[in-house]
Length: 179
Figure 1: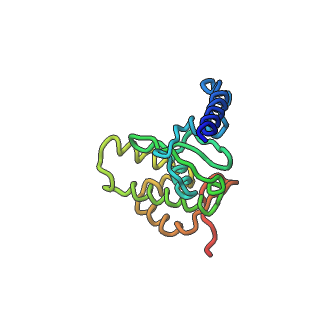
Figure 2: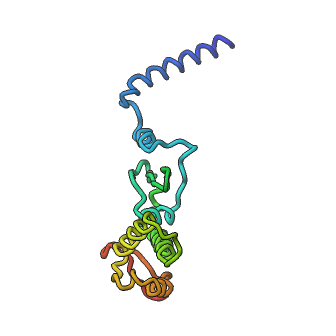
Figure 3: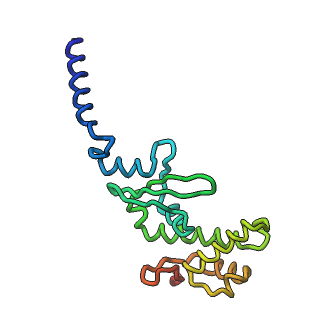
């Protein structure tokens, strides 16, 4: 019995050593393993996202290093002082309803942050607010007179938040019909 265990252990080690030859050069790694290594994935620092979260961060221009492996979208988000590594099924990212909800969540955050007095007045926050206005303008094509006047912006959002939808053709959020 012991001989059989040792024999099977030695055989499995021989196959493992042969299979591992050349791994340092990356020749025998599977594509998924290469992608996971590229994104520094481990169970400790990988988060499962849904489509809404993905599109929220995508509109906020925080998603980087995206790739698709075996139907899974992998990527990184720079959030303040750390990177967040994420994964989600590619089908989640392709769901237009989730895209609309994620983008609407991003617009809601931008509208809230642009409210006068919401953020402390300092140079870093002023710079951040300028970038938020650019993101909002790029994704909605709202005129400056609305973006620069928070009461108008807030009114626009409260009237249209339930009807915002992404238009592939226009490459922006548009206001859909009332349901």
